[in-house]
Image (tube, rainbow, N blue to C red):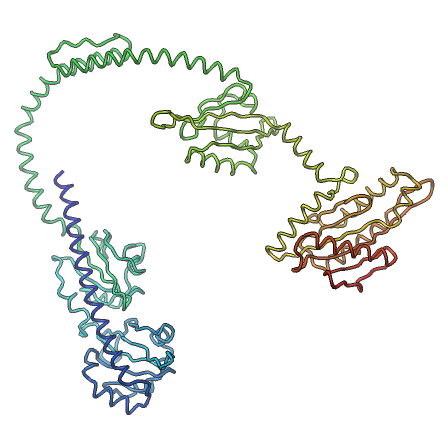
Length: 635
């Protein structure tokens, strides 16, 4: 117990210390960076917008107090060319830096920026470029002023080198891109930090997270870790303290405590054993008698002891046992009654546990599903129609999780290959007191006949009984759906409206039976000539409509001509006389100016009447309310 409690206390204490140290270090490095930003901004105020190399070099020389923070200073113009430097180094003035990372960042953000670390070509020392943008009075970018800072001697990490976290603890600094800037192990400087898989907390810190954690070091040790951000430079300061070092004082204390406790325990064990044996003898007798009550060998316990507490326990046990027996008898009566109700009910019923596993199905449900009581639940699920199975499972899981009623209609395929439509309604059984769920009770109805009647009624409501095509109601509903899709996705569809030319003589001479036969044949031909995704309707009499889904105007014209030619070949014979019909077809497409389906219908209807007025057996394309394409006519 001392070890477990001590570990938590030691860890919390060290975490607080690491967090405090990390924050202090990050604040100090932040101050170092901001001080250098301020020096460069003051220098920018002095030199202004001047790009003259000699004048700038003189200003850098006379303001050497401002640039004392840096190993060197450069001035870059708007095109990225170095126009002045201090101290002057041959070849640096005139150097192009427009392709460098820091130039692009400053030109884009116009904010002070610290570059990625680089190694000096002459000194071989790791450095960074601290730079600020040069802006004119209009706020336009005209270049930058950059100060070169050595990471080893520039004073940025003086405080980190003095941090002492025991023998193995240390502080380190890395860039947000993952490059090590400072580490006690010099060989790791300028290398990349371990991967996110190895140390996920460090990876979070590189993304801007600040906090404490426990993670693995490069050498495999587990360590306490604390991270703080140096926001102006996008750097991360990390402090690391191996756990074995943090717990070393506690280990020494526990080691001494262990031997003391062990000596006392060995000395006290015989005495404690004897005392416990004497005290627990009546309790042992009570245990034996309770066991005998449990197996029915006695009705009550009778304990001979002077211990008042055990006597109270025995009395309470006898009272509870008597009440339990009464409850068991009452429960058996209710169980028998419930079994009779479940077995006699004409509806299918089932019971599940809180996890959703079925524990009981009444005979009506077993007969309805065509299974026996040994049927496994997993097999039962496989008999649900594949289109309904996933949705039913998702809703059942949702009901189990939230306690809401499960109401679902689905198709069940019996073993005899017959498919039933079943209506499931299950509700959680919850105790009134405490609200504890005991399981679920469900009722299952066979609604196959009702679903079939509803399907027939829905079909009859939207289809023409003579031709089997859509009627006006069904056709307009599909027009509304296509128009809604057009408004949403700009997917155009085409509409053909036509009536039959020379149809009235067929009715007059051959009667309605001959006219109905001609209508059926025309319907069959139209359905065969259009695509399966298109919708064909008889809107009444000899008026027909075709909705061509996802169809361009040129495609619609070709289909219309195909229909015109195909229908003109259809004929019926009455009293040795052959009768034929033709079609006057109006063609249109959905337009952006259409406000509703009625606009499209009116436009197609006008084109159909114009085709009839032009002598029948024609096609007229009307693409807008004010612009009719009468040139698209077919004779």
